[in-house]
Length: 136
Image 1 (cartoon, rainbow, N blue to C red):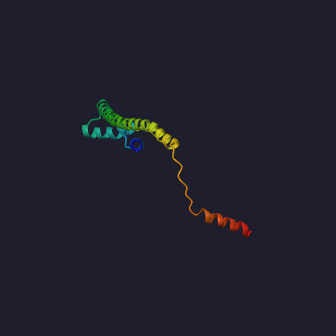
Image 2 (cartoon, rainbow, N blue to C red):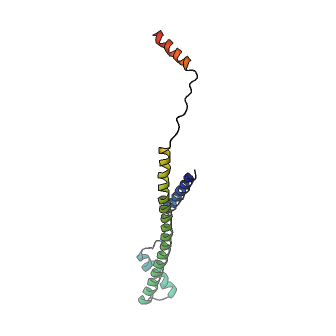
Image 3 (cartoon, helix red, strand yellow):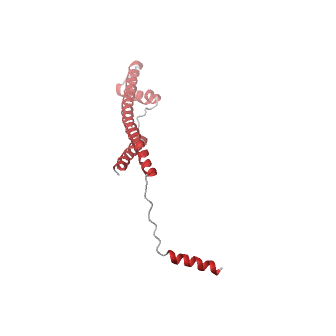
């Protein structure tokens, strides 16, 4: 019974972490580069009150690189979490499989004593069968 409970716990752990691994999560996406060179650039033109291309391009590049850095950092964090879920799900499944085969072996190869079959009214049944044969 204890072996079955260990198997059940490991199976539930594996199912839980597999669910967490497969569960969709929000990842960081970047906007198209055109967005940075149109929208962001026009905002910097208004904010800095300049049309100097070098200055504007430097600000747009810095903004774009900052967005990339944040997205990569966040997605790396999510990757680490999903990797842990995979590791725990896989490890608990690997431990649960031999226990499963052990339990299957117990069920298949257990030796049960034949159960006593006690028919108390067998004389009545024989009489009934004989009477049915004679009535034909």
